[in-house]
Image 1 (cartoon, one colour):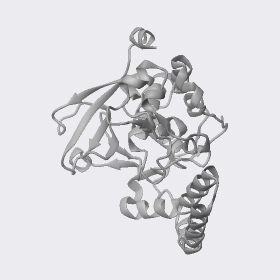
Image 2 (cartoon, helix red, strand yellow):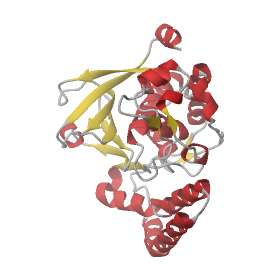
Image 3 (cartoon, helix red, strand yellow):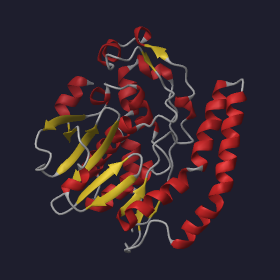
Image 4 (cartoon, one colour):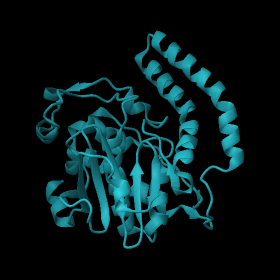
Length: 299
C-alpha cells in the first residue's frame, strides 16, 4: 500500500457572499491549492499490505464501543442545544467518532483491494458550510445559479448531515484527478491514491458545496461529461456513475487496471468491469476537462 506524508495544509473559508460573484465562486472551485498539495505528497515504497494493520484493527475494535457510547451521548446533547451551529458541529463530531470503525468494516469487505477509505459526510473543518441557514432559490442574485440549479430545489440547503455527499464528492474527485493528471507527474494508481487521501476524513468543502448546488457542477468546474450507453465496453477514462436516484460513484479505467471510488467506502481496486456495475439502473458519464477557450467563455 502506498503511504503518503502530507506536507502542507491550506484552510478554506466559505462565505455565502461568494454566491453573488460568479468569478470568485468559480475560483473557489479551481482546485489549484489541492493540486499543489498533491505535488507535495511524499510517496513511500509500496507494499502489498492491508490499509490498517492488525494492531490498528485491534485498537479500533477495542475502542469502538466506548466511542459509540460517546457518539450517542454527544448526538443526544446536540438535540438539546439552543444554538443550531453548536448542535450541528456536535453532530458531525459524533459521526466522526464512528468513522474509523466504518473504515475497518470496509477493509473486512474488500481486504487489500481497499486502497484508501472514505467518509461520506462533512469534514470537521467544514462548519462554515453545514452551519449556514438555507437560501431560497429566488434570493440567489446570480441568474446562472438561480436558473441552472436543479429544478426541484426550492432552496439551497447547506446542511445535509447524515444524508451523504456522493454527487458533489464524485464531481470533485473526478475534477481533481483530471487536473492533477494534467499538471503533476503522478499517474495511475499513485495519482488515484493521492486524490483519494483528500477524502479520507470526509468530503472536502468544494464537494459539500457542489452537493448543495446540485445541477451547477459543470458550470462551476472546468469539466464536461458524455453519456456512454454501453457500460460493459467503456474506453479508458474516469466516469461519473449514477446508481439509481440517490447514489453515485467514480469509475476509473486505465489501459491495465480498473478502480472504483465510492464516497461511502473508498478507493477500491476491482478485477473486472462487471464488478463495478452489478447494480441495475445505472448510467455512466465520461468526464473530460473543458478546452481552455471554452472554459474562459463560460467563466
